[in-house]
Image (spheres, rainbow, N blue to C red):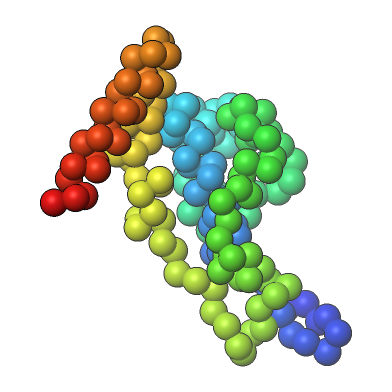
Length: 151
């Protein structure tokens, strides 16, 4: 789909960087809460395959569906746009011309905050009910990381 705007051609495509970012944030929040794609899909009355497409950015999430997702995942709408890189913001369909720039490639796997290992660690960390124990554990991890990084 092309949109004519002030004598400039802009394109809207699937797998847009912003759609992919929103999908990553859906996945991050869903995983932090320990929900499967099947569970989120059931709560939305859609298939888990549709949830997969949303999380990959292959299908856009409508405003009403994003609202439903935010309610199920107990997150504000703004949460899904948090931590968006400047490069991703520049990949907005209204900002990129068909002939001048490609959307950035998916760096989901390189982002340590999006790795399953990180999500499991955070979920486990917050399952510790005693705040002082969590604080001491965090200090221990920082200390170990500092020792390893100094070598």
